[in-house]
Image (cartoon, rainbow, N blue to C red; front, top):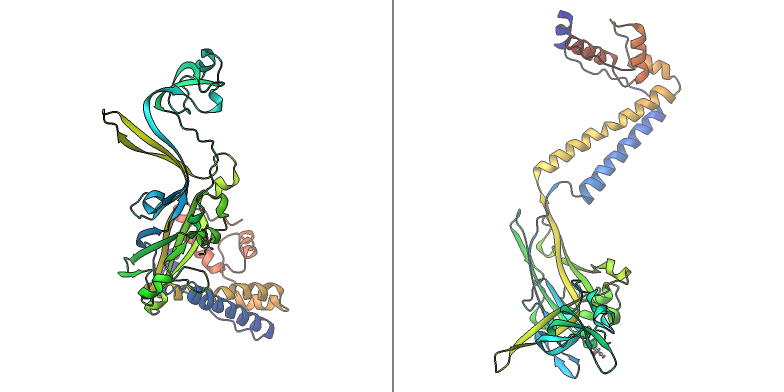
Length: 402
Ligand SMILES: *[C@@H]1O[C@H](CO)[C@@H](O)[C@H](O)[C@H]1NC(C)=O
């Protein structure tokens, strides 16, 4: 027991063995050089490990769509084709509309093919199933002179949404104006996508493109769709306009700029034939003189735009710099492990080196165990193992090495 205590209160320092060998010397330096290059090139310069990062970007987005289209011989303006109208980061531009006018509450025949019938019993099987335009009454009534359909109670006449409509092609030439302000709370840094270099004149006539006008905040719908690699004429779906802010705040302010990219977000519905595109219904309500409500129902096919903002900012800070420098210096030592393995196993005269490197210590455990430890790896200093063994055994913990 006493020997354990005296063994514990000791200090060990490593004894160096200098090996004058070109082979191992070159390997050693090359490995060290690789490790240093990795840390300087990748960790420090590329990953900027000397900075603290703020990824909690705060952002506000305002949008405005402009342009006129012609649909069903009517001129459509923003109030007609953009919904919701608040100019938020998510908005829809309606490209196709199926309107059903003058609907009132009452009884009328269904309009969908699956509700055709010849007698009442054909309709009772549909009762309590959703999917029609009203509550089914279970009666079979005339839709027109030749066809009979199940009757519903609801808004009448029922919508006929199977008519083919061509989309409003002018949408392609509409423009989306995006105003985006961001803030990095950690550094209290704010910026907007109206860069100081952008003048009023420029905004009047610029259109974003990927080559010459990368900071123009006005986007042609056709361009956005094209950049998202979609075909405008058969599009209905969700397009993401992504604004990325990757800022290095150690550099000057004009190098913190937005970068725009475009993708289709509902890529899944692109692949399936079930429920393709994007549509929704809304209604406008009116009152007749006698007080009854009537409405115009619209089924709208639209392109939805989501403006997504992401980004992060980094700035020099002492703590990550120190931590990463320590990691870098420690890692240079990893080269020694590799060199030791080569030196003690593969180099000519390995046995000699081994003898120089490890000195035999007096052991108090069986020879076989000692052999086992030296087998496990020359890396383990036998003396250290002896210490552990000594410290552990009083507490009944056995060091299992083989
Ligand atoms: C969009 O604008 C271009 C150029 O002004 C014009 O040639 C084209 O016909 C327009 N497209 C539609 C669908 O109106």
